Image 1 (cartoon, rainbow, N blue to C red):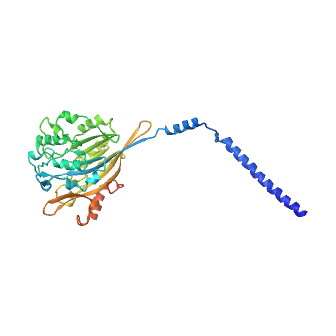
Image 2 (cartoon, rainbow, N blue to C red; image 1 turned 45 degrees about the vertical axis):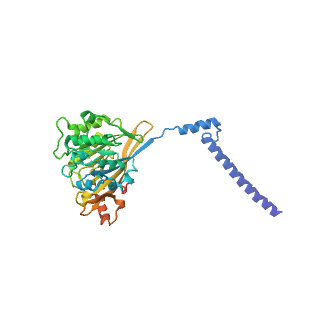
Image 3 (cartoon, helix red, strand yellow; image 1 turned 180 degrees about the vertical axis):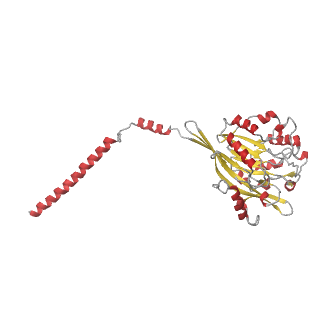
Length: 397
C-alpha cells in the first residue's frame, strides 16, 4: 500500500505541472489576442479582393534606361580611302567588321566624323585639307552607328560646298547628326529625340577651325563654341528632355591629359545642365570624370577611332559605354543619371610599309601577333582613363 500511495503522489505532482503549463499558455494566447488587432478576423472574398487590389495599386517608381556606346575620330587619310577602293567604289565595312557586333547591341552608337564627307565630286583629299567619300558614312551606318558629331576643325576644309554636300548626304539617313547646318533656321531648330521612353537633346560644338572661318552671315555652317550660344541652345530644351548630350571638339592635340580650357568648358556645360560631354580632337586618349556630384559625366577625349596617324598613342582609341538611367517617382520627381561606365581599347592595324588592310581591333580580339605587348599597352591607357574615376568595367558589352 505504501508503494501505491507514493506513486499517486508522483502522479499528482505531474498533473499539477501540466496544469500549470496549460494555464500559462492560456494567458499567453489571451495576451496575444488582447494586444494584436484581430489577427483571426474573418474577411469575405470581396474584402480580400479589394485588399489585393490596394496592394497592386500602390504607386511605384518607373525606371527607364538607354544604352550608349561611343568611339572617337574617323580621320580618313588618303591611305585609308585608297585601301577601301574596290571595283570602282569604296567599301570601308571590312575595316569596322570587328566593332560592328559590339556597336549593334546598343540603343545608340556615337562617333565623330572628323573629315568632311564632300564626296568624290569635290575631289578626295588627305591632310591638311581633307575630303572623304560618302561611303565612309555608309560603313558606319552599316555598323550600327546612329549619333554623329559633325563640328570639327576640318568641317570647312572644302568650304561651303563641302558642308552642303555633307548635309545632303546625311539628310535622308536614319541617323542623328549635329554641328553642321544649311541655314540659320536649320541651326536654331529645336530638336528633341526619344528612345526607350527617354527624351534627349544632342549638340555638337568645335573650339578649333584651323583658321578657316565660314563666310560672313553663314556662321551656321559649323557650330563654333561660345558660352552664350551653348546657354541659349541648352535653355531651349532643358525643361523638355531627360538628358542633354554635348559633343565637344576641343583641347590640345596629342596630349594624354585634359587642358585647363577643357576643364573650364566642361564645368560651364555641367553648370548649364549637360549630363554627358563627349570629347574629341586631341587624337589620343584622355581621362574621364564626373562633375557636379555625379550629375555630369565627361570624356575628355576618345582618341582616334580609325586613322593612319603614326605612333602608338594615335593608333589607340577608346570605346566608352554608359547607361542613361531615368527614374520617375510617384510624386512626379525625376532622377536622371549617367551610370555604369565601361571601357575598352581599340587599335587600328594596317600592313606595315604597304598602308593596306586597315582594320579596327577591339582589345578583346588582340594577341601578340596583332600588337606586341598589348597587355602592357592596356595598363598604360587604363591608368590614363582612370585618373579620376576608378570604378570602370574594362569590357564594353
